[in-house]
Image 1 (tube, one colour):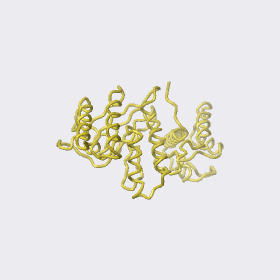
Image 2 (cartoon, helix red, strand yellow):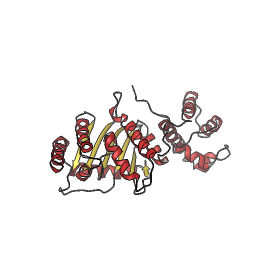
Image 3 (cartoon, helix red, strand yellow):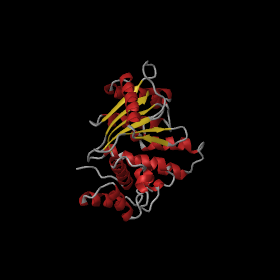
Image 4 (cartoon, rainbow, N blue to C red):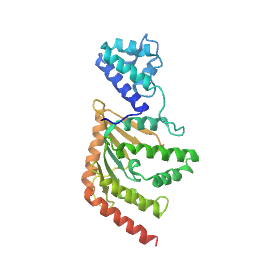
Amino acid sequence: MGARIGVTARRIKLGIELRGLRKAAGSMSLAEASKGLGFSESHLQRVEKGEVPFKQTSHLRNLLRRYGVVEDTYVETLLRANRESGSQDWGYSTTPPSMRQYVGIESLARSIRGFHPSLVLGLVQTERYARAVFETIKGPDEQTSEFVEQGVALRMQRQELITRDDSPASLWVILEEAALRNCLGDQDVMLEQYDAIIKLAQLEHITVQVRPTMRFGFRFWADFTILDLLEGLPSTVQVDNAWGAVSMSDKPREVGRFARKFTALQASAMAPEDTPRFLQQLSREIKETNA
């Protein structure tokens, strides 16, 4: 049985499908596709990005007719997808739109590859570690307590993607040693986080590697995630920037470029079977340092 996907994910899936149909219909431009159909070029662009659905069923029906899509069952499937994607399933007012968009795409992933040089990757953070992360940026970014609570709640909700019993997504995480040595919260927070990573790494569908600080080899300074989506949907790469926004691309050239970076990082990281031993050593060091 396939895993259920949320409203945002369904809207994104519909947008990707419509973009594919537009390209298949002679690679129409957005202007050519929307001309005379009662909605703007910019609105069609937002639909294809998965940001909004069509408000009127007739708009989508006419668009499909322009694309030459007339098969009744397929048309009805797309119309139903549009109706079902008309609400919001992420009720987090402080979450940036770019992040909500990313979370929607992430929920469609069947496998995920993620790298982080300075923090534990969000998908494997404990609740207390995640709270410490958001509390750390709350002051300098002039954020509210609501920002912290919603950020933690969303991060925990996202982890269901890899922890659910029904078709969990596979996950391969590479962390710089510095990400594990950057202490947040207090000693108990870090010890709990190390233990959680060890337990997750024991699952068949989760792999965790550590990139040692003192080892030579390829390095990269920005965190990124590669999402391989459900069949028929393009793989997507996500990179965070210094302003807290999320940049995404499903262009094969960009996805391939980051896939090669990930492969290079794999080669310069410790073997996955060494990860538990390394984290246990960090636990001992923290206890000795703070004794």
